[in-house]
Length: 64
Image (cartoon, rainbow, N blue to C red; front, side, top):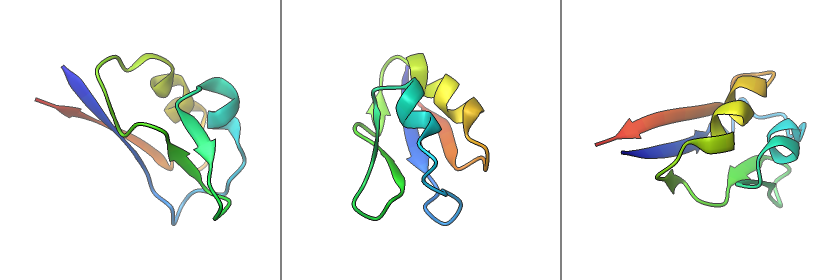
């Protein structure tokens, strides 16, 4: 099963908690978080990053 990792740029405050917890995230030139890879086969640390986001900007969707 694959997962799609999305960041709501309107919610993201660029705190970097996701970056510190998961190597799939970076802070872009706009100061907002972004996934290096939007589609992943293993949810791994992306789930932890999503749960730690203080504004709920990271959404993970299952892709069939």
